[in-house]
Length: 323
Image (cartoon, rainbow, N blue to C red; front, top):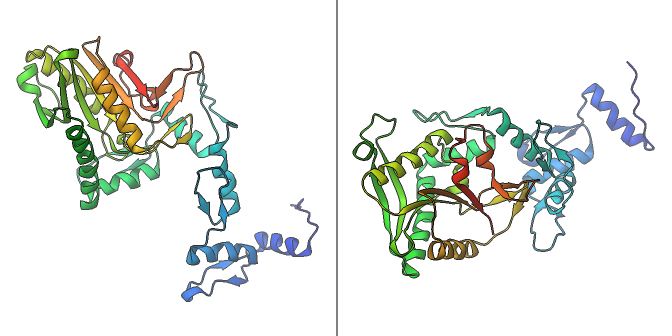
């Protein structure tokens, strides 16, 4: 087999030949690391894992991203661009992304295959990405539990400060309400805000990282909402019921990460609760969830609604808010 590689530099040619011979003459001397490289430039890049040096900085206004490898900066810079080179080839899907990694994650929403499984005893959660599995694993630690409580406590203080009456950790017994043999026996809702003047009850769930790291199964979670709603109605609850799935963490739109301060999200949450009057017996609002924009009518749709396991009968009752 002949190689077609050409170079204007004898040094580059010598480095290229080592990709065939597997020779690695450059060794890292940092604290007996022992890492070996085929070129001096690769060794220089490797050394930054020890020095934490990040010489490449994003020049986009307001972005403080830095990295140790120039190619990583080039990849990062695409999140600030409207150019979406990576398009989904699934029939009828118009999704496009500015990073191949985002496209690969998106494609899994069509297959439903979740390759990364939690090994914590009796958990059974699985995920589309290794990153989501890693974040989920934190939920099994004391630190993860404390972080979740902090996010909920922030919302509790927000409601108190703005004179919004609420009940917290509300227990809804499915058996009492439905008189049926169902998988779960009860639901516990983070916050319930009743607005008799609007004929609306808001069930607010604080979904850290869009629930991607909490280890729940989508079919179980949607059934929990519908069963809890049915239980409340059968038990005599007259208000229309609106579920607010509030994500306090980062999210993306069409694959691009969005910057929105927590205080701005909280203002939107407050305004929604204070002004919205439900017209349906049950509604679900995904607030600050990662989303895509419909090519037909430019409507914003949370990614979770496009997952194969999301119940089709619940879809018409759902809306997405990102602004």
